[in-house]
Amino acid sequence: MHVETTRILRAWLEHPTYGLEAMLPAIGRLHTPDTDGEQAEDDVPAVPAFYDDVDSDGLAGVDGVTPPELPALVLVVDSDPRSTDIGQPDKPAAEMVLNGGLGYYAEDTGREQGVRDANYILRAAWNSLRWYNQPRRRVKATGYLTELNGVKVVKVQALTVQRMAGAVGRGTLLAVLVFDVIVLNTYD
View (tube, rainbow, N blue to C red):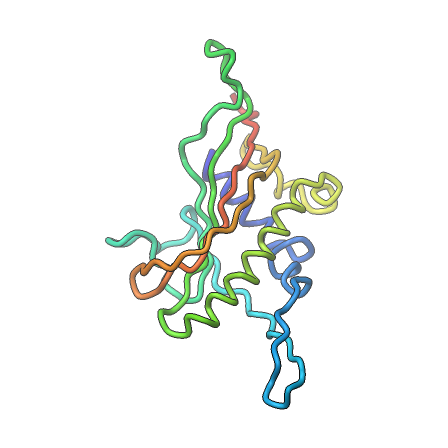
């Protein structure tokens, strides 16, 4: 179930109209005085390499998840779903909740720019996943983006960006977008 959920969410985040890259230009930029005293906007950061724990080789290392290329986004969805129907233990629940996270990794150098880029990129991802909850937008996209192999992603909720600075391999995990995914298991 987590494999299908990961693939659905990654496809959504890579969607040309509703995905991360489409949302990024709309994120407000920090205005700072340049050398002439004029207000200048931060540049739109490039979308980093994108990995997940299902289809990306070379992520697992001795020290945990280490993307082979930096900066990088890593999508991880929990493989242990929990039922949303706690009132009927004898009946298999169709709806399940999975925890997920989208981490932004950067080089150890250039920390200030990396933190700024992480904030912009994860805000764009947050907007994209919020848009996933609007059925009209999902209908305009493709059916693959909502259902795969009998697993249907119904809703993405409880989106929270957590900033951090933890060394991981040769890079630093600067921020994580944490969320819950409500999935419907239609193949049981």
